Length: 452
Image (cartoon, rainbow, N blue to C red; front, side, top):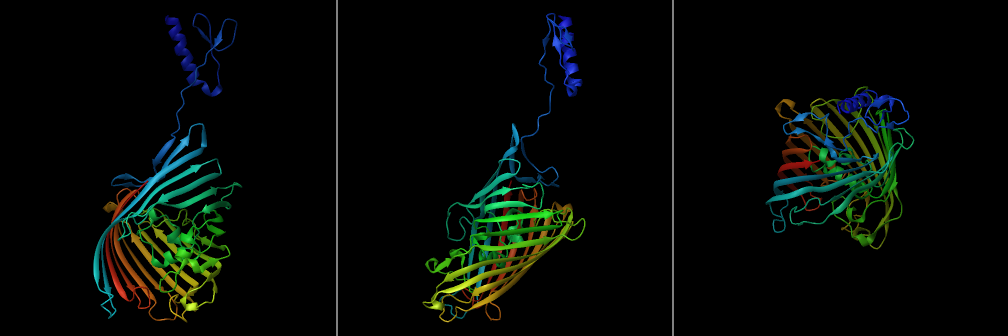
């Protein structure tokens, strides 16, 4: 019996030490173990113990240590044990807002316009995100969302699809060439391209929101795009696809057009180039939240065209007007440790002055810009004050079409972007020619986010 036990221990020791050499072990009828085959000996099937690779991951091990722990990756990842190139990611994003909003009208017609103050609580974003890897090159990303649930008096609304695209990554084993197909964002604006979970303020600049609708619906109308980078120094994107959405087609006042009078016969097209010219300051990921880590500097420019839009309105009478929407965008962004600064400029061409007034269907242009900055105090549990200023002339060279917005706020990164809270005060000034007239809107917001 002792001989059998010793032989077994010997077998295990040999298997452990010599597993790399694929040593075969044999045992005779008496239980003795040998390293060579012979008559009366049978081969032992002893497998060395191997460390199992984690198949489910969520925590970003490179994250700073926040008050509530390390930040998570975007969604939890499940990797197939029998094929590591196949995986599934799933996650959620919830952004809540409690706000108090005051509107001060400047118009003298107090019978139809009067000052008001409204308190509101709503879910700014509610999203379920999922993605799947099919093989080494191909994956699918999508989300379903119910944004602004209970905002003002809109009720619960309904879920709809946001992103829904197939990504083909490095099919030629180079970062210069990648593809996305279907509902993927085109880069009409830096802040619109950045994931909303990574922006400083949940409501993006108004001028950037217009850029998101000016070329294609929500900057992700069904399209095909090619993108890539060269050593993180040069990034680019080119795309074409479904053009401007009739329900988001508006004039300089902000008024919408009846869908039945709108038609577009051509695809949009265009592209974006982004440069990181300084060594050690490369843009590796588009975000507005850096948590006081690292540094980057980048500048970029884009041109997009959504042509052959036909419409009728009161301002054009019975005639059909045909226009092109052209958008030019410039961006600059930098951060060094705790300090981040970012700015963008937009030029819109093909802007209709006013749909509703006869003789005001003339076309013009529009210019706008914003700048934003944040400073992260790492030693104060990642409390980060931020500011943003926005100026937009919705119809150039005409009085009364100006819009300005000022925001000051404070974010608290309790677990990076996975769990954060904030407070912000915003003051918006509307010109007399804009929809609802000249007014000042002041809003105090308490915000929170849970995201993984």
